[in-house]
Image: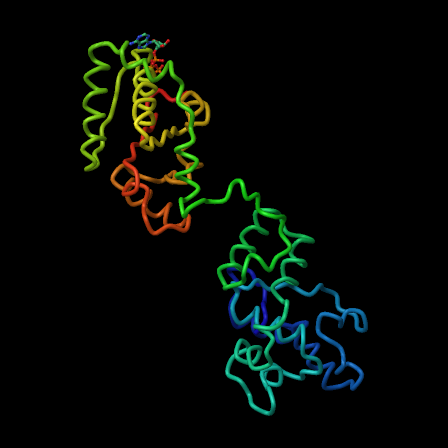
Length: 302
Ligand SMILES: Nc1ncnc2c1ncn2[C@@H]1O[C@H](COP(=O)(O)OP(=O)(O)OP(=O)(O)O)[C@@H](O)[C@H]1O
């Protein structure tokens, strides 16, 4: 079980027969344990302090499964002379490295995951560190066990209300926007009434407002957002670009919205809002808790 690099066009027979392919740093370590008694008391990771290798020890990611558990064992077991020997615990050969690590009590009790983060911190880029951290959390590691800064209680959810709802309901409504519906022209009024009727029916719907630049679409959105929010309902305003999103109060880009992903298609909107709030820790979707409307600026986005 070791990695071999080869050219894509190379014949597999040649790869296997190439000098040195059958040896890896790990098999060299097993050999050293076989040959030298002194080597048997040294952990694999400390080996470079006593013996010379031309390469550095590679790290293993928890998502790599057996390769990772092999690394866990090597971090704790000295003197192994073969893979099988490494899997042997109390005279019993375990079928997998994971089971061997479990039998030795290394997985539950040790701080390998913390060590993994500490080691990764030295050379990984932030995005890669974040991925590693979420992988570790998904393996059942409690986030509280990491020395993270304290969570600002002010931003925690209260009374089991998901954060996304608190954020959306705390958007301030400009009084000028609230009264702007009185100034709508006939076409805007028609669209305004129809959209509000759809929101009130609470049965969902997809409506498109279209028109040449400067004909008052944004003016209409502002009036709609203010009216819906003024009624205590949630109006999620998204746009495909940051500039277009910044025009609308509480507006955000679709991909940064915690409710709607960039790939969302209109018919998936309901499902994506549900998925989002369930992810936030609530089993009750926003759409059932508070009537929700969603505006997306598309055509003519700046
Ligand atoms: N009913 C109205 N009463 C007063 N002013 C209005 C009305 N409708 C639109 N306007 C004004 O007309 C101008 C253009 O409107 P708006 O920006 O809403 O157009 P738009 O269709 O969103 O344009 P674009 O597609 O270029 O973004 C704005 O200054 C807006 O305030």
